[in-house]
Image (tube, rainbow, N blue to C red; front, side, top):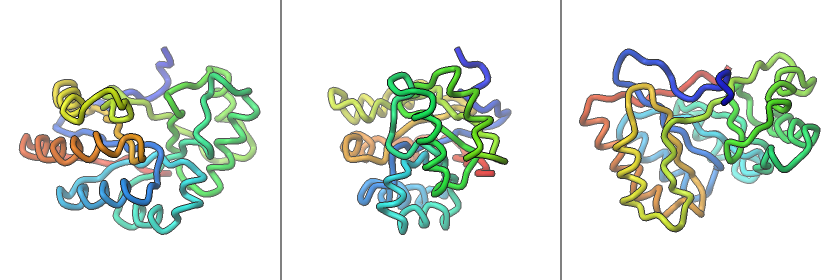
Length: 200
């Protein structure tokens, strides 16, 4: 399904890509940034437009510390449940605050028609969006899981070039805050580098 989307980065060496969805968040995002700094790691933050509007200082810190940002729509809409027009306008509205050609559909749900129209919408003129999916979903948003379970899943499934999803959100906080430091420690000791992707 959707082979034109990016599910994993082909890398010859030990490189992985940490991504964080749904921020900026007043507690979770600063925690993530502090952890990344400790391990000299870079990441990609797929931000919700309304959260950028609410926390511009945290958003600016993400940029100032050398991380990438991506568009995650303005209100975290599910592409399967809204019209193409509503969906594309959500992306375009977020793009007024988030200057990036990186995009991730909320819930990973996007129609083929929406993906096609993203490339031609006048509100996104000059920005060819690169849709970034993932091959390792931590599950930190799942309140039925433990932090240990999330950690174990990430450690077991991550390989060179993997795109790993965490969330800097209230819902994911308990599991993400447990697993992320251990993921950073484990892969740093294994000689991995955490890289970002260019915004534009």
